Length: 193
Image (cartoon, rainbow, N blue to C red; front, side):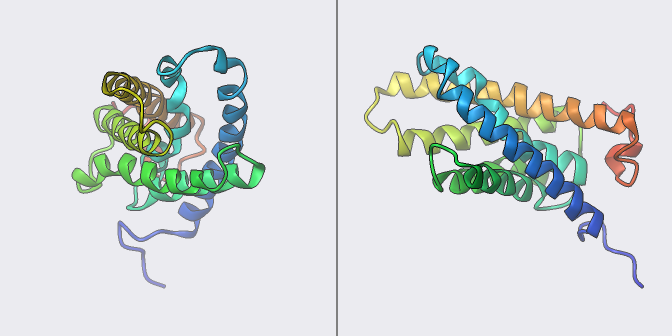
């Protein structure tokens, strides 16, 4: 039996990425209720400050799995789970999952999938936020004023950089400390910054 290449997915990669994705699909479903419930009292664009939660898998996947496609896979599967659980936005969330996953993973791709530090994670979160803002503006807010669109985009990018990027990096470090990621390079770098 041959060893997998550094970018080839192993069974454990698929299983762990799937578990993360399903867990975040449930989180997305709950976050949908918050966004359309109590957070509805916060006017747009200010509500964009909590948007980053929907983008965590786009950064967490690559940080944990460290293989091409991990961000796309985890964000897309999480979006599918959210849709199956009954998101108020319907199947368009699958399109969002795809675009946000690609955008979040782009920061890691730019490093050739060799750099896993927090600045790259924050950049991945910011890029995922920019993709989400673009999709929102095209699909839901095309007639809003341009200053509103810029404010909304800025808040989404900042939220996603902090919550998805910084939060994804922190969550990866926390999981590594428990030992559950010992089968991954991310779990063996317990003190990397």
